Structures are given as C-alpha cells and as structure tokens.
Length: 322
Image 1 (cartoon, one colour):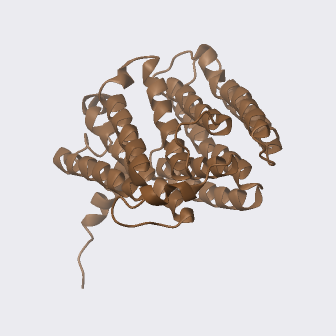
Image 2 (tube, rainbow, N blue to C red):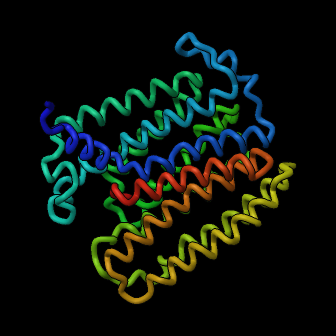
C-alpha cells in the first residue's frame, strides 16, 4: 500500500512558478514571425551555411519550431527571474506565491533560472549564429527588465513589450530575415510589443484600487492602429491575405475596448487582474491573425489557436496568470 504523494505540492508549486497559462501565449510569437517573414519573400535557403552551429543542419520547416522552443525557454527564464527579483514585494502583496510561501527554495529557483537561459540560447544555436544572437539579445532584455527596468513607469512596460517583439523576431530570423526594413515583420513586432507594453502599464497597479484613466483604453487603441498598419504593410509587400488584418483586428479592438470600459472609476484589484488575464489571453488571437496573414488563410492557424485557447482557459482556473 503506497503512502501519500508528498511530491504533488512541490510539482504544483513548480508549475505555479512558471504560470502555465502565460506559457501558452509564447510559441505563437516566433511562429507568426516565421510565417510573416516567409510570406514577405525571405528565404531559408540562404541560411544553410549558417545553420550548422552545432554541426546539425535542420529542415526549413523545423526552424520555426526551434525558434518557438528557444523563446519558450527564455520566457520561462523570465518568469522565474520575475519571482526571484520580486521576493520582497511578493512577501507583502502575494505571500502565496511559491518563493515567499516556502514551497520552492530560492536556491532551486536560481538553478532553474540559469538552466532555462542556457538551454534557450543553446537551442537557438540550431538556427545559426543569427538565431543565437537574437535569443541572446532577448535574454539580456529579459534580465534587464526584471532586474532594473520594471521599476520605471514608462521604460518598464516598453522593455516588457520589447521582449515580446524580440520573441516574434526570433521566428523572422529563422526564416531568413536579417534586419532589413521589411514592413510586415517590423509592423507586426511593433504591434505585439506595444500591446504587451499597454497591458503591462495597466498590470503595474493590479494589486491596488485606483483610477486607471486613459490607460484602460490603451490595448484597444494599439490593436486598432496596429492591425491597420500591419494590413497596410502586408498589402504593400504583396501578401494576399492582408485583408485578414482588418477583418480580425477590428473585432479584437472592440473586444479590448469593452474590457477597458469595465474598468471605469476605481476598479477593484480583482477586476483589474481579470481584465489583464483576458487581455493576455487575447495574445493567442493576435498570433492567430498574424500567422494567418503569413500562412495565407485562417483555417489552420485558427484551429490551432482555438485549441490553445480552450486549454489555456482550463489552466487559468488552476494557475496564476499575469
């Protein structure tokens, strides 16, 4: 007869540290970047000589998966770092988090923090020096945000948005983009980065009841303007599915605006946290739209996105999402 499973609380604390609902919003960034760069005319054939960094040349289709895996590892690195750097604040405001509650030791978190960074950069090496360099820059930006920049009212959200923009660009680099002025790639990275910056600016005060003012409208404004620019850029680049930017972006902007409308006056911390969670889940639909433009249709990206969305909703009932 077996005894109680004492490892179950530890496993749950480990997953709580990594915020599974957030993790599901990550792979779509590089996949969308890969598809958009490919649709814009960049070719992976030029990468063959530069993809043997570890002595392995991988197929073109697998490079998007490599970019997604490395971005996911660096995102996990950032989540762990967030809790490590915020231990004092969490002891006051979120004492049930894994570190202040004692469910996970700081030493264990530090080991995971270092391992996820090393693994993310190593995996990126399969996409060559350019892939490794982009992910190294992403890692440095994540570290700088967690250690210093998050304390600044404006620079903090912008750095967080920059992390998401770089996540999309890891996929574009995997498709052959090398920093050229490609309007679809740059516009999509800007849209994603500014949206996350807007949500971060609201989430900064999610534990206190206070008036948000115009900040509550920022996600909707970014979506409306950003998808308009993406649609224009995709059309200029000759991408046939450019109308999807308007067809899908408009209802997303309305949805984000309704969420902001509910935060009028002095919303409760629970109300703000709920809106932030919804806006974060909206990242999946942004990625579906961007991927559909690059893919040339909505069916496949939409099916994948809906599956992830349903799974994420289930995870959000069990784990913290912010």
